[in-house]
Image (spheres, rainbow, N blue to C red):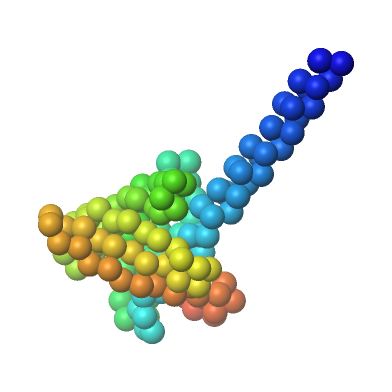
Length: 140
């Protein structure tokens, strides 16, 4: 009887942990997909890799030579804060900066770049996969 009770507690505990882990995975995967800062700007594809999340420019009408550049690097999800932390490569300045990313909803990404004591916040909007399909996209 005692063994059956313990087994039941472990099983229920396992379900709770699994549900929590899948809940974190769902929040953590909200960053995946195509993002664009503004009309006519480059489209960035965020994907998961073994060493974290990465964002690569997959389409740019204004500057096709930057397609393929990895701009978000080493992004790690902080489940406690609900944010990603990592590095971004600034093509314009040719250097990396520390970044924090929040995804408050499925359609919006807010990036805060930190340079010394200054910070700058920019917003991106999600681009549906089918909208990107019609553009020239770099190989993944």
